[in-house]
Image (cartoon, rainbow, N blue to C red; front, side, top):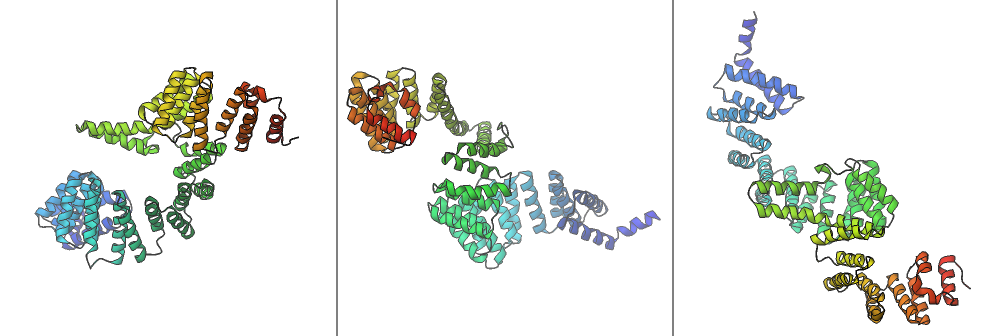
Length: 501
């Protein structure tokens, strides 16, 4: 009885029913188990009807879905050999090669599918994707540009193609062209709020920061999603307005506590506002998933560049590989510098010098790094080396006020060179009229020379500019000649005690 039912199942009507079932499973899968059961049926079909091209197609498609790529490829080629329909087989081969990482072969099958159906938008997009994966974004763009010229393209496919072209142009740094594509896409679908972010990004890259800001505002009004809120906060940071960045970034992190980029930008905003306590909390939140920074997913740029260098080295492209590793090392220079700065503030000058020199090895022409090496040598009492580095800093950036100030301070410690020190300090004031410490240093020079009137005048100016280190004033022996002066005490009372005689 059982044998009779099996014979009936595999008659023509039974085969048709099974094929219909397989097609439905491929089009509307519910679980991996569905695919596995369907593959058993497809395999039986090929055994019962080994010359049935469609049966081999189904088996190939199912093997592809389940990751048996080599088997899938053999099955589909068998289907073609038996006269199976070319377009679905070529399409499946394209898909399978993509998932297997065989991009060049995938492109070959994609073009063969396109010969069968030249106006199929899906295949055009698939080929474009493969060109991108092959590292040729311009070829991908050309593929989609040819698709746009087809009159049969549906509005939905035209919209998707314009958006994809915009993203491809962004990848190849053709920002103005990308903006044109995004704006054309907006005309087809004005309600798609995701395009606001793309348009805003392009405007920002083109230097239109106000236009970008207004675009991101519109995106938030349309949909206050975490990504849109993040973009708005980022736009405020780009125009130098960290105060306004806080609200959208806080809201982005409230709606999505795992949005690490929003936490990072929040820490950046607080840092720029000198709200360091809040900056610490936001930075810790950004690092929470990987506080030790051990995983590449939290350091994508460094990780990807390292992977690129490793692959190039193994391909024998050594110079390119070295350049990748050099780029990563350059990213570490700010860490060395900031570590040096922290040690300097802790008066651990020898350790600070080691870190500043590491930063300087990476960026030997950075005026700020040169200046800090000079400052550190000054604190270590090695004045000749200090002067050498401070002069190098000025040479690299003749408008860097801090280097003139530091050189002035250094020379003021050498009695025979105090007149020279005065010149450098006055240059620092000219370059940065709001740097209070320059005025204070000039006040000290005048006090040492016995010119109390000028000393008090510059001390007053330093206080007006925001000098607020009372402990430094109290312990500074350079100002001893002024301490009995009424005006000196009035200044102290006014700026530190809130009253004056």
